[in-house]
Image 1 (tube, rainbow, N blue to C red):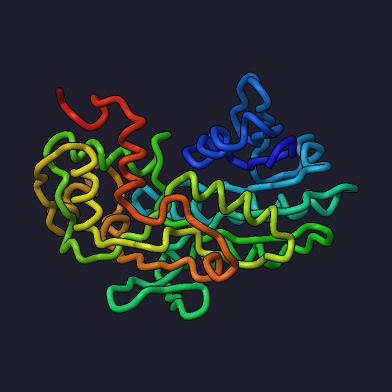
Image 2: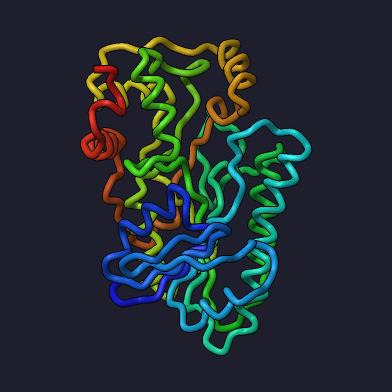
Length: 314
């Protein structure tokens, strides 16, 4: 994509940073955020609150690609207050974007709504895809279902829509790789729990490439799993991370240790122990080619772009 207009709702986090790095030099990017900063290069920041219409709506006129990344992080304790905020931050932002699009004379060509590959059940028996995946009803799945429902129900004639169920995303810009690097740095980079739980992942470059690919294929819409075609077990993931970082060993963290640690740092063990075994069947069938289908090259790329102090004590 070159010389297009891309609007990213809630684009100041990890995936937004990856999108700016990937698209920013060749396209005009507008970031909708609660805390705008000064524009730089071809990137500008516009204030919005993620729930009400305002002057920000005019930024959507003549947009080629709109990507909604809004949503409170699930890396927290699942208190009733946090649960409500996790729901509301996703559904409110999605609903107000739909309402905004309906006011435009020249609406976005494509609206991609981020979603999560955690919508599928805990799976150690077989992989899940868009056709055969089983969806249950624990809290994280309820969040995903309600999020996608609001998006699918948004009537926006003239705008193509796609859902990306994004797996755990890895990149040098930050995100989930940070706590794993810290564990490895202090010799704690072993497997978590049983280590058998599946770990579906995707490189940030392939997240951006799939967005670009969807834009370039106007015949495609609907739901796509955005996950590398070769998921690994938690044990394999941690071993690959250690190999890329030059660590010979890492102490494991058993389930009881994770429960204590999660309570101390204010998160939930589900984030480490749920077996996410997801395949990108629709994208592969439609011809998408991953730049990083295997974990080892992906991890080497990420580690290779980081200073040594990020993953070694000396």
